[in-house]
Image (cartoon, rainbow, N blue to C red; front, side, top):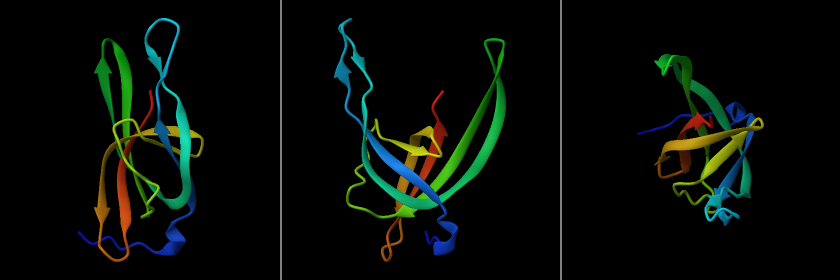
Length: 111
């Protein structure tokens, strides 16, 4: 897959955060996110829909975040992006092109 992106489209700043859970007093674990790196990228909404779940209307939105490859970005199940002060979970990701490298993330906002 080839991704054509102009450097002028990379207007937003995002912070990649890694979750390292810490033990709490009740014997469980709490999320503890630490900043890994900050980079610029292109952020767009991909889709949105409304569902009726247990009598409540729930909005589901997915977003696309494209940034340049950085070796500090190591993706695991608990990684997240913070863009514009909002936390986004990573639904899926892929490395696009071989030269230059881009990451393309599909994100969902934390509930």
